[in-house]
Image (cartoon, rainbow, N blue to C red):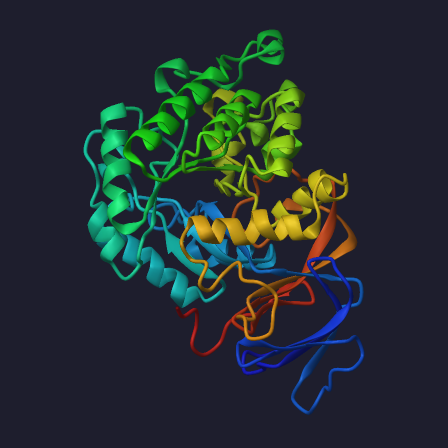
Length: 445
């Protein structure tokens, strides 16, 4: 297929897992939704047999590491966004811990332009909260917000804004432009030298433990700060039962807090560390089965607002080494939807409409890109969509993915579901399960 084909007819598709319909995509929007078999396919229309497939609004990731600039050996904006499109995503938020750090208008605009040039998905840079992620001085928050990148999410992810005075100032500052501070909740003095979750497994295998309270203490502090100044707070990669309970309590008080969980924290436990395979070394660490149950409950009941991948690619040499020397992080863009299907949909905890909420509508709203992404599947809305075959079964092959790195924790695992097509404003970026190279004008806003 070529980029100049702009009209598609999806026959027999099930929007949000509901009844089958025919959906016509034309001129970048959803042009018609009709009874199955009734929509006309005139000349020039590409017909896709989508029988029994689920149509979702394009997925939005609020937490993606694209590594560029500075660590192109791990990932580039081009390779990372191609992986995102393959996973059904149409927008990603690129985290700030690049080299140089995205703490100025110049760097966030560079990342934004790289995303436009690549053309696979819309790239929305996340601005650093502090200069160089150093935790001492606020970065140019206002300048990044007013730049062409229009930054609305700010995070020192990879590091915690541990100074409460600085965190308060950041929360106050972003109110001026309806921004949000996304906190990496990790008390550094409680996790110095930590290698994995502190518990039975860490004690038995002799790795330094990472206590749950190191995450929970920061979340408790920050929801109170957010309440005090009347600002928005977002909690990155929540991972413990205590964290879920704190966020639930904060929401019951009316505090403007949102939270995310990663696919790997929905599916994997600290038992995987017993083999000392650094693939499973991640920040925050994989927790216990009880914590996994708690975050699933929290996602199902709305305490946790979104699933975010925390896609963290690394070159082979940073992972193929002894555990203590290995980098923290896992890739996740191409497996996220399948993991959510396996953990939440196939277990009956969530519907496909719920999946659209936590992987599209809510992250788009939190990132303030909901004018274009996370929209309802309705006539006149942008044709920014993902088509999924939920009955497909695949064995994950890390080397066959679109990302430049191979550090997936799901290598060799059998996962359900397959993204068969992704559309960005009516342009196919994935067809028949394979990326479609953009041509002509790329990206756009």
